[in-house]
Length: 77
Image (cartoon, rainbow, N blue to C red; front, side, top):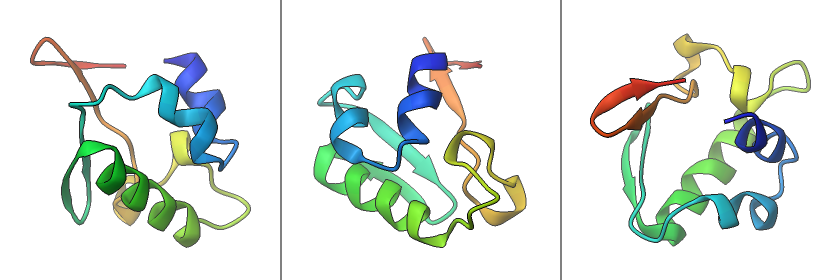
């Protein structure tokens, strides 16, 4: 998770993508995103909304950008 946090905060999808499985599902405030292309679009849209004082891994939950991770059906991280 630390590596993901470091890479997501680089604001470069190319460094994040190797950590995302081809069949991953990302949940954001605007819905669920399946497959790499949709996940990329959601992440980049979130980056575009963040200010310099925020980071992807520590974003305000009220802004709908807080990551929630699941492992084997259970919350993780």
